[in-house]
Length: 452
Image (cartoon, rainbow, N blue to C red; front, side, top):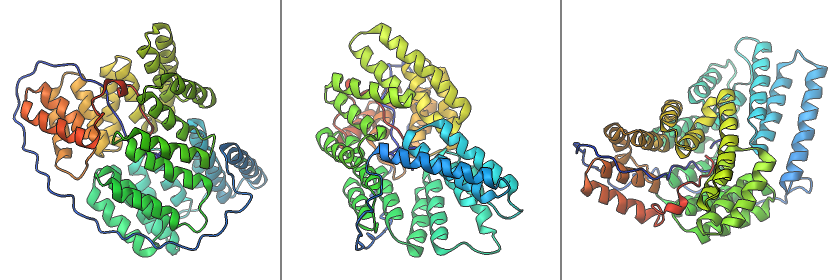
Protein backbone atom coordinates (compact mmCIF):
# COMPACT_ATOMS: atom_id res chain seq x y z
CA UNK A 1 0.00 0.00 0.00
CA UNK A 2 2.98 2.33 0.09
CA UNK A 3 6.64 2.79 -0.63
CA UNK A 4 7.47 -0.41 1.20
CA UNK A 5 4.05 -2.05 1.30
CA UNK A 6 4.04 -1.91 5.02
CA UNK A 7 1.30 -0.90 7.37
CA UNK A 8 0.51 2.74 7.71
CA UNK A 9 1.34 3.81 11.42
CA UNK A 10 2.50 6.50 13.32
CA UNK A 11 2.92 9.08 16.00
CA UNK A 12 3.44 8.16 19.64
CA UNK A 13 5.20 11.35 20.69
CA UNK A 14 4.28 12.70 24.12
CA UNK A 15 2.45 16.00 24.19
CA UNK A 16 3.37 18.49 26.94
CA UNK A 17 0.50 19.79 29.05
CA UNK A 18 -1.13 22.89 27.63
CA UNK A 19 -3.23 25.35 29.55
CA UNK A 20 -6.17 26.02 27.27
CA UNK A 21 -9.80 26.86 27.82
CA UNK A 22 -12.39 24.13 27.86
CA UNK A 23 -14.04 23.72 24.48
CA UNK A 24 -17.33 22.33 23.26
CA UNK A 25 -16.92 18.66 22.38
CA UNK A 26 -19.11 16.87 19.87
CA UNK A 27 -20.28 13.59 21.38
CA UNK A 28 -18.58 10.61 19.75
CA UNK A 29 -21.10 8.38 18.03
CA UNK A 30 -19.85 4.95 16.98
CA UNK A 31 -21.85 1.85 16.41
CA UNK A 32 -20.49 -1.48 15.18
CA UNK A 33 -18.42 -1.07 12.03
CA UNK A 34 -20.50 -2.08 9.00
CA UNK A 35 -19.35 -5.33 7.47
CA UNK A 36 -18.22 -4.76 3.86
CA UNK A 37 -19.02 -8.42 3.25
CA UNK A 38 -16.10 -9.76 1.21
CA UNK A 39 -15.73 -13.50 1.05
CA UNK A 40 -12.39 -15.18 1.37
CA UNK A 41 -11.01 -16.03 -2.07
CA UNK A 42 -10.80 -19.67 -3.00
CA UNK A 43 -7.52 -21.38 -2.33
CA UNK A 44 -5.80 -22.61 -5.46
CA UNK A 45 -3.63 -25.59 -6.15
CA UNK A 46 -0.22 -24.05 -5.70
CA UNK A 47 2.66 -25.00 -7.93
CA UNK A 48 6.25 -25.36 -6.84
CA UNK A 49 8.13 -22.07 -6.76
CA UNK A 50 10.61 -22.11 -9.66
CA UNK A 51 14.19 -22.76 -8.61
CA UNK A 52 15.34 -19.46 -10.12
CA UNK A 53 12.95 -17.40 -7.95
CA UNK A 54 14.98 -15.15 -5.60
CA UNK A 55 14.92 -16.42 -2.04
CA UNK A 56 16.99 -13.70 -0.39
CA UNK A 57 17.27 -9.96 -0.78
CA UNK A 58 20.73 -10.40 -2.28
CA UNK A 59 19.38 -12.71 -4.97
CA UNK A 60 16.44 -10.37 -5.65
CA UNK A 61 18.74 -7.37 -5.97
CA UNK A 62 21.01 -9.24 -8.36
CA UNK A 63 17.95 -10.16 -10.44
CA UNK A 64 16.70 -6.55 -10.33
CA UNK A 65 20.09 -5.17 -11.37
CA UNK A 66 20.26 -7.60 -14.29
CA UNK A 67 16.74 -6.63 -15.34
CA UNK A 68 17.63 -2.96 -15.12
CA UNK A 69 20.72 -3.45 -17.27
CA UNK A 70 18.63 -5.27 -19.87
CA UNK A 71 15.99 -2.54 -19.86
CA UNK A 72 18.65 0.13 -20.37
CA UNK A 73 20.09 -1.85 -23.28
CA UNK A 74 16.67 -2.10 -24.95
CA UNK A 75 16.12 1.64 -24.60
CA UNK A 76 19.57 2.35 -26.05
CA UNK A 77 18.91 0.06 -29.00
CA UNK A 78 15.45 1.50 -29.77
CA UNK A 79 15.22 4.94 -28.16
CA UNK A 80 12.06 5.88 -30.04
CA UNK A 81 9.85 3.12 -28.59
CA UNK A 82 7.84 4.22 -25.57
CA UNK A 83 7.12 0.66 -24.40
CA UNK A 84 10.82 0.16 -23.66
CA UNK A 85 10.81 3.21 -21.41
CA UNK A 86 7.84 1.74 -19.60
CA UNK A 87 9.91 -1.41 -19.09
CA UNK A 88 12.79 0.70 -17.81
CA UNK A 89 10.46 2.40 -15.33
CA UNK A 90 9.21 -0.95 -14.07
CA UNK A 91 12.79 -2.13 -13.61
CA UNK A 92 13.64 0.93 -11.54
CA UNK A 93 10.48 0.46 -9.48
CA UNK A 94 11.33 -3.20 -8.84
CA UNK A 95 14.72 -2.16 -7.55
CA UNK A 96 13.26 0.70 -5.52
CA UNK A 97 10.90 -1.65 -3.70
CA UNK A 98 13.92 -3.65 -2.57
CA UNK A 99 16.17 -0.72 -1.67
CA UNK A 100 13.76 2.00 -0.60
CA UNK A 101 15.86 4.35 -2.73
CA UNK A 102 14.20 7.64 -3.59
CA UNK A 103 16.69 7.96 -6.44
CA UNK A 104 15.39 4.72 -7.97
CA UNK A 105 11.81 5.95 -7.68
CA UNK A 106 12.74 9.28 -9.25
CA UNK A 107 14.44 7.43 -12.12
CA UNK A 108 11.30 5.33 -12.58
CA UNK A 109 9.26 8.50 -12.98
CA UNK A 110 11.82 9.96 -15.37
CA UNK A 111 11.52 6.91 -17.62
CA UNK A 112 7.73 7.22 -17.66
CA UNK A 113 7.98 10.90 -18.53
CA UNK A 114 10.03 9.91 -21.56
CA UNK A 115 7.55 7.16 -22.45
CA UNK A 116 4.63 9.58 -22.49
CA UNK A 117 6.64 12.06 -24.57
CA UNK A 118 7.05 9.34 -27.22
CA UNK A 119 3.60 7.73 -27.05
CA UNK A 120 0.89 8.80 -29.50
CA UNK A 121 -2.13 10.68 -28.22
CA UNK A 122 -4.49 8.46 -26.24
CA UNK A 123 -1.82 5.83 -25.57
CA UNK A 124 0.93 5.31 -23.08
CA UNK A 125 1.78 3.44 -19.85
CA UNK A 126 -1.14 4.78 -17.83
CA UNK A 127 -1.58 1.81 -15.49
CA UNK A 128 2.15 1.72 -14.72
CA UNK A 129 2.02 5.47 -14.11
CA UNK A 130 -1.04 5.19 -11.88
CA UNK A 131 0.68 2.56 -9.75
CA UNK A 132 3.84 4.65 -9.42
CA UNK A 133 1.92 7.80 -8.58
CA UNK A 134 0.08 5.85 -5.89
CA UNK A 135 3.32 4.46 -4.50
CA UNK A 136 4.67 8.01 -4.29
CA UNK A 137 1.48 9.17 -2.53
CA UNK A 138 0.25 11.27 -5.46
CA UNK A 139 -3.40 10.28 -5.31
CA UNK A 140 -4.85 12.91 -7.66
CA UNK A 141 -2.26 12.15 -10.32
CA UNK A 142 -2.89 8.42 -9.95
CA UNK A 143 -6.60 8.96 -10.46
CA UNK A 144 -5.99 11.03 -13.60
CA UNK A 145 -3.90 8.20 -15.04
CA UNK A 146 -6.73 5.74 -14.35
CA UNK A 147 -9.22 8.12 -15.97
CA UNK A 148 -7.10 8.02 -19.12
CA UNK A 149 -7.45 4.23 -19.21
CA UNK A 150 -11.23 4.59 -19.11
CA UNK A 151 -11.01 6.63 -22.31
CA UNK A 152 -9.12 3.96 -24.27
CA UNK A 153 -10.73 3.10 -27.61
CA UNK A 154 -9.92 -0.55 -26.95
CA UNK A 155 -10.74 -1.50 -23.35
CA UNK A 156 -7.98 -3.21 -21.35
CA UNK A 157 -8.29 -6.88 -20.54
CA UNK A 158 -10.14 -8.18 -17.51
CA UNK A 159 -7.05 -8.49 -15.30
CA UNK A 160 -6.01 -4.89 -16.00
CA UNK A 161 -9.55 -3.65 -15.39
CA UNK A 162 -9.63 -5.44 -12.05
CA UNK A 163 -6.27 -3.96 -11.06
CA UNK A 164 -7.44 -0.49 -12.05
CA UNK A 165 -10.58 -0.89 -9.91
CA UNK A 166 -8.54 -2.14 -6.96
CA UNK A 167 -6.17 0.79 -7.33
CA UNK A 168 -9.15 3.16 -7.30
CA UNK A 169 -10.11 1.47 -4.04
CA UNK A 170 -6.64 2.16 -2.66
CA UNK A 171 -6.94 5.81 -3.67
CA UNK A 172 -10.31 6.06 -1.91
CA UNK A 173 -8.84 4.36 1.16
CA UNK A 174 -6.05 6.93 1.45
CA UNK A 175 -8.52 9.74 0.90
CA UNK A 176 -10.32 8.51 3.99
CA UNK A 177 -13.39 7.27 2.10
CA UNK A 178 -13.67 3.74 3.46
CA UNK A 179 -17.11 3.16 1.97
CA UNK A 180 -15.89 3.95 -1.55
CA UNK A 181 -12.75 1.86 -1.02
CA UNK A 182 -14.85 -1.16 -0.05
CA UNK A 183 -17.10 -0.66 -3.08
CA UNK A 184 -14.15 -0.61 -5.48
CA UNK A 185 -12.62 -3.69 -3.85
CA UNK A 186 -15.91 -5.54 -4.31
CA UNK A 187 -16.00 -4.60 -7.98
CA UNK A 188 -12.41 -5.78 -8.42
CA UNK A 189 -13.29 -9.03 -6.65
CA UNK A 190 -16.22 -9.55 -9.01
CA UNK A 191 -13.87 -9.31 -12.01
CA UNK A 192 -10.78 -11.08 -10.70
CA UNK A 193 -10.93 -12.45 -7.14
CA UNK A 194 -7.65 -13.52 -5.68
CA UNK A 195 -4.51 -12.60 -3.77
CA UNK A 196 -4.40 -8.89 -4.60
CA UNK A 197 -7.81 -7.93 -3.29
CA UNK A 198 -7.51 -10.34 -0.34
CA UNK A 199 -4.38 -8.46 0.72
CA UNK A 200 -6.21 -5.15 0.37
CA UNK A 201 -9.14 -6.36 2.44
CA UNK A 202 -6.67 -7.46 5.12
CA UNK A 203 -5.27 -3.93 5.31
CA UNK A 204 -8.81 -2.56 5.40
CA UNK A 205 -9.70 -4.74 8.37
CA UNK A 206 -6.42 -3.85 10.09
CA UNK A 207 -7.30 -0.16 10.13
CA UNK A 208 -10.94 -0.69 11.08
CA UNK A 209 -10.24 -2.68 14.21
CA UNK A 210 -10.81 -6.27 13.11
CA UNK A 211 -7.42 -7.99 13.56
CA UNK A 212 -8.66 -11.58 13.48
CA UNK A 213 -10.40 -11.03 10.17
CA UNK A 214 -7.36 -9.17 8.85
CA UNK A 215 -5.13 -12.14 9.65
CA UNK A 216 -7.52 -14.53 7.87
CA UNK A 217 -7.42 -12.39 4.74
CA UNK A 218 -3.62 -12.11 4.86
CA UNK A 219 -3.43 -15.90 4.95
CA UNK A 220 -6.03 -16.13 2.19
CA UNK A 221 -3.88 -13.88 -0.01
CA UNK A 222 -1.14 -16.51 0.10
CA UNK A 223 -3.54 -19.40 -0.40
CA UNK A 224 -5.08 -17.68 -3.43
CA UNK A 225 -1.72 -17.18 -5.13
CA UNK A 226 -0.82 -19.99 -7.49
CA UNK A 227 2.93 -19.62 -6.97
CA UNK A 228 3.63 -17.25 -4.06
CA UNK A 229 7.24 -16.14 -4.00
CA UNK A 230 9.33 -16.13 -0.82
CA UNK A 231 9.24 -12.33 -0.93
CA UNK A 232 5.43 -12.28 -1.05
CA UNK A 233 5.11 -14.84 1.74
CA UNK A 234 7.55 -12.84 3.85
CA UNK A 235 5.61 -9.64 3.25
CA UNK A 236 2.40 -11.29 4.42
CA UNK A 237 4.06 -12.60 7.59
CA UNK A 238 5.51 -9.16 8.22
CA UNK A 239 2.10 -7.55 7.85
CA UNK A 240 0.69 -9.99 10.38
CA UNK A 241 3.49 -9.00 12.72
CA UNK A 242 2.65 -5.32 12.28
CA UNK A 243 -0.98 -6.13 13.01
CA UNK A 244 -0.04 -7.40 16.47
CA UNK A 245 2.78 -4.93 17.08
CA UNK A 246 0.19 -2.17 16.86
CA UNK A 247 -1.86 -4.02 19.47
CA UNK A 248 1.01 -4.27 21.93
CA UNK A 249 1.48 -8.02 21.50
CA UNK A 250 5.23 -7.78 21.08
CA UNK A 251 6.18 -11.45 21.42
CA UNK A 252 3.54 -12.50 18.92
CA UNK A 253 4.63 -9.75 16.54
CA UNK A 254 8.28 -10.71 16.85
CA UNK A 255 7.49 -14.32 15.99
CA UNK A 256 5.87 -13.19 12.73
CA UNK A 257 8.81 -10.90 11.95
CA UNK A 258 11.30 -13.70 12.57
CA UNK A 259 9.34 -15.98 10.27
CA UNK A 260 9.31 -13.27 7.59
CA UNK A 261 13.07 -12.81 7.96
CA UNK A 262 13.63 -16.54 7.54
CA UNK A 263 11.48 -16.60 4.41
CA UNK A 264 13.28 -13.67 2.75
CA UNK A 265 16.47 -12.83 4.63
CA UNK A 266 18.30 -9.55 4.21
CA UNK A 267 15.29 -7.30 3.57
CA UNK A 268 15.71 -4.12 5.59
CA UNK A 269 11.95 -3.52 6.02
CA UNK A 270 11.61 -6.79 7.92
CA UNK A 271 14.78 -6.13 9.91
CA UNK A 272 13.62 -2.68 11.00
CA UNK A 273 10.42 -4.18 12.40
CA UNK A 274 12.51 -6.68 14.35
CA UNK A 275 14.67 -3.81 15.62
CA UNK A 276 11.65 -1.81 16.70
CA UNK A 277 10.14 -4.73 18.56
CA UNK A 278 13.42 -5.52 20.30
CA UNK A 279 13.70 -1.90 21.41
CA UNK A 280 10.17 -1.96 22.78
CA UNK A 281 11.05 -5.12 24.71
CA UNK A 282 14.06 -3.37 26.27
CA UNK A 283 16.73 -5.06 24.16
CA UNK A 284 18.24 -1.76 23.07
CA UNK A 285 21.72 -2.98 22.18
CA UNK A 286 20.36 -5.58 19.74
CA UNK A 287 18.01 -3.04 18.23
CA UNK A 288 20.77 -0.49 17.81
CA UNK A 289 23.01 -2.98 16.01
CA UNK A 290 20.22 -3.82 13.58
CA UNK A 291 19.36 -0.17 12.93
CA UNK A 292 23.02 0.71 12.38
CA UNK A 293 23.35 -2.03 9.77
CA UNK A 294 20.20 -0.87 8.00
CA UNK A 295 21.44 2.73 7.89
CA UNK A 296 24.77 1.60 6.51
CA UNK A 297 23.05 -0.30 3.68
CA UNK A 298 20.20 2.09 2.87
CA UNK A 299 21.03 5.56 4.16
CA UNK A 300 17.40 5.78 5.30
CA UNK A 301 16.91 8.75 7.67
CA UNK A 302 13.99 7.01 9.38
CA UNK A 303 16.46 4.74 11.10
CA UNK A 304 18.96 7.49 11.79
CA UNK A 305 16.16 9.02 13.85
CA UNK A 306 15.63 5.68 15.60
CA UNK A 307 19.35 5.57 16.44
CA UNK A 308 19.11 9.12 17.76
CA UNK A 309 16.22 8.05 20.00
CA UNK A 310 18.17 5.09 21.34
CA UNK A 311 21.21 7.29 21.95
CA UNK A 312 19.02 9.79 23.79
CA UNK A 313 17.67 7.01 26.00
CA UNK A 314 21.20 6.17 27.15
CA UNK A 315 22.20 9.82 27.52
CA UNK A 316 24.66 10.06 24.64
CA UNK A 317 24.11 13.66 23.52
CA UNK A 318 26.96 13.62 21.01
CA UNK A 319 25.47 10.63 19.19
CA UNK A 320 21.99 12.18 19.31
CA UNK A 321 23.23 15.36 17.64
CA UNK A 322 25.21 13.45 15.02
CA UNK A 323 22.34 11.16 14.02
CA UNK A 324 19.80 13.97 13.94
CA UNK A 325 22.08 16.09 11.78
CA UNK A 326 22.56 13.27 9.28
CA UNK A 327 18.85 12.51 9.28
CA UNK A 328 17.91 16.16 8.73
CA UNK A 329 20.15 16.44 5.68
CA UNK A 330 18.67 13.34 4.09
CA UNK A 331 15.11 14.33 4.94
CA UNK A 332 15.62 17.68 3.24
CA UNK A 333 16.99 15.91 0.16
CA UNK A 334 14.03 13.54 0.04
CA UNK A 335 11.51 16.32 0.56
CA UNK A 336 13.02 18.13 -2.40
CA UNK A 337 13.14 15.01 -4.61
CA UNK A 338 9.78 13.30 -3.89
CA UNK A 339 7.95 15.46 -1.36
CA UNK A 340 4.64 13.58 -1.10
CA UNK A 341 6.45 10.31 -0.44
CA UNK A 342 8.54 11.89 2.34
CA UNK A 343 5.98 13.96 4.22
CA UNK A 344 4.57 11.32 6.56
CA UNK A 345 7.91 10.41 8.09
CA UNK A 346 9.70 13.72 7.85
CA UNK A 347 7.20 15.32 10.19
CA UNK A 348 8.08 12.72 12.84
CA UNK A 349 11.71 13.78 12.50
CA UNK A 350 10.97 17.45 13.01
CA UNK A 351 8.73 16.79 15.99
CA UNK A 352 11.36 14.66 17.72
CA UNK A 353 14.09 17.15 16.79
CA UNK A 354 12.19 20.00 18.42
CA UNK A 355 10.90 21.87 15.37
CA UNK A 356 7.11 21.62 15.76
CA UNK A 357 6.40 24.52 13.38
CA UNK A 358 8.16 22.76 10.50
CA UNK A 359 6.45 19.52 11.46
CA UNK A 360 3.05 21.21 11.32
CA UNK A 361 3.73 22.59 7.86
CA UNK A 362 4.70 19.13 6.65
CA UNK A 363 1.70 17.54 8.40
CA UNK A 364 -0.62 19.90 6.55
CA UNK A 365 1.01 19.04 3.24
CA UNK A 366 0.83 15.33 4.05
CA UNK A 367 -2.86 15.63 4.88
CA UNK A 368 -3.53 17.53 1.66
CA UNK A 369 -1.88 14.73 -0.32
CA UNK A 370 -3.52 11.80 1.52
CA UNK A 371 -6.31 12.86 3.90
CA UNK A 372 -6.91 9.41 5.40
CA UNK A 373 -7.26 8.49 9.05
CA UNK A 374 -3.65 8.40 10.10
CA UNK A 375 -2.72 11.60 8.26
CA UNK A 376 -5.53 13.34 10.14
CA UNK A 377 -4.24 11.96 13.42
CA UNK A 378 -0.72 13.14 12.58
CA UNK A 379 -2.06 16.59 11.72
CA UNK A 380 -4.07 16.73 14.93
CA UNK A 381 -1.00 15.85 17.00
CA UNK A 382 1.16 18.37 15.18
CA UNK A 383 -1.47 21.04 15.83
CA UNK A 384 -1.49 20.14 19.51
CA UNK A 385 2.29 20.29 19.69
CA UNK A 386 2.01 23.82 18.32
CA UNK A 387 -0.44 24.88 20.99
CA UNK A 388 -3.53 24.73 18.73
CA UNK A 389 -5.68 22.42 20.82
CA UNK A 390 -9.01 23.62 19.43
CA UNK A 391 -7.86 23.04 15.83
CA UNK A 392 -6.52 19.65 16.87
CA UNK A 393 -9.93 18.74 18.31
CA UNK A 394 -11.72 19.83 15.15
CA UNK A 395 -9.32 17.71 13.10
CA UNK A 396 -9.57 14.50 15.09
CA UNK A 397 -13.25 14.38 16.06
CA UNK A 398 -14.50 13.59 12.53
CA UNK A 399 -12.14 10.59 12.45
CA UNK A 400 -13.59 9.33 15.72
CA UNK A 401 -17.01 9.13 14.04
CA UNK A 402 -15.74 6.88 11.25
CA UNK A 403 -14.82 3.20 11.21
CA UNK A 404 -11.12 4.06 11.57
CA UNK A 405 -10.14 2.36 14.82
CA UNK A 406 -6.53 2.38 15.97
CA UNK A 407 -4.77 2.80 19.29
CA UNK A 408 -2.94 5.80 17.88
CA UNK A 409 -6.21 7.55 17.00
CA UNK A 410 -7.65 7.12 20.48
CA UNK A 411 -4.33 7.87 22.19
CA UNK A 412 -3.90 11.19 20.44
CA UNK A 413 -7.58 12.03 21.01
CA UNK A 414 -7.06 11.39 24.73
CA UNK A 415 -4.16 13.84 24.76
CA UNK A 416 -6.17 16.47 22.88
CA UNK A 417 -9.13 16.22 25.25
CA UNK A 418 -6.80 16.35 28.25
CA UNK A 419 -5.18 19.51 26.89
CA UNK A 420 -8.67 21.00 26.47
CA UNK A 421 -9.55 20.17 30.07
CA UNK A 422 -12.17 17.61 29.09
CA UNK A 423 -11.35 14.84 31.53
CA UNK A 424 -14.36 12.67 30.73
CA UNK A 425 -13.69 12.34 27.02
CA UNK A 426 -9.96 12.06 27.63
CA UNK A 427 -10.57 9.11 29.95
CA UNK A 428 -12.90 7.48 27.43
CA UNK A 429 -10.39 7.77 24.61
CA UNK A 430 -7.54 6.63 26.83
CA UNK A 431 -9.52 3.52 27.73
CA UNK A 432 -10.24 2.84 24.06
CA UNK A 433 -6.55 3.18 23.20
CA UNK A 434 -5.46 0.86 25.99
CA UNK A 435 -8.09 -1.70 25.04
CA UNK A 436 -6.39 -1.97 21.65
CA UNK A 437 -2.76 -1.57 22.79
CA UNK A 438 -1.94 -1.76 26.51
CA UNK A 439 1.40 -0.10 25.77
CA UNK A 440 0.02 2.89 23.84
CA UNK A 441 1.15 5.37 26.48
CA UNK A 442 4.46 3.75 27.39
CA UNK A 443 7.26 6.31 27.27
CA UNK A 444 9.70 3.76 25.87
CA UNK A 445 7.92 3.47 22.55
CA UNK A 446 7.60 7.21 21.87
CA UNK A 447 10.55 7.72 19.50
CA UNK A 448 10.33 4.46 17.60
CA UNK A 449 8.56 4.43 14.25
CA UNK A 450 8.00 2.10 11.37
CA UNK A 451 7.43 2.72 7.69
CA UNK A 452 4.13 3.30 5.98
